[in-house]
Length: 103
Image: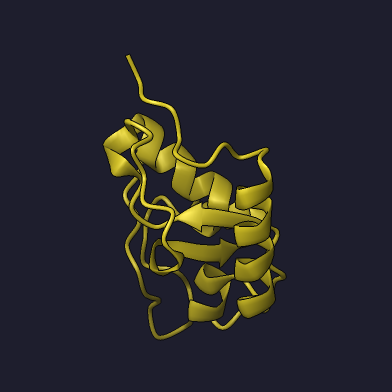
């Protein structure tokens, strides 16, 4: 049985923390690494507690992502179908074969 999150995602404490992350990181961290400017819409747990929801809600474990990057990362973590490989080739194309640009 999965554990519950320490901060429910609809609770006031999470909403304050989410607002803080978005204020501090208004642009998607993954897109910026590729030289793309996209607004942060989602707050992601960098290390998600191995899927048991015992995740670390410390600010250091949270990052701002656009919805597309967050969905891709979450899907990869949940089903193991993709691993994220950071970086781009000389032309700027992501080297991750599972990146949505390479599908």
